[in-house]
Amino acid sequence: MYVILLSIFLLAIAFAGIAVKILIKKDGKFAGTCASNNPMIQEKGGNCGLCGAKPDEQCLND
Image 1: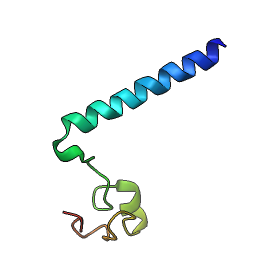
Image 2 (image 1 turned 60 degrees about the horizontal axis):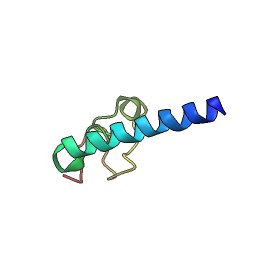
Image 3 (image 1 turned 60 degrees about the vertical axis):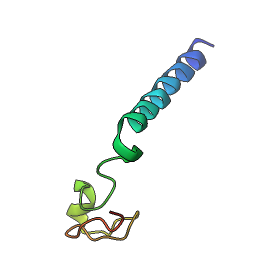
Image 4 (image 1 turned 120 degrees about the horizontal axis):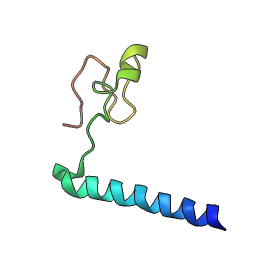
């Protein structure tokens, strides 16, 4: 029972942290969601799953 309560408490803290970040950020946008900002996608040369931009291109959602 202790482990379940601890898990629920940690998940609640995580959700609260994300909510605070969304409220503080301008327009609720997260930085680094596009391929041009993601170093793991830049190394592989893949396209962004969000907007389709290549790593050397600007985010197409802007």
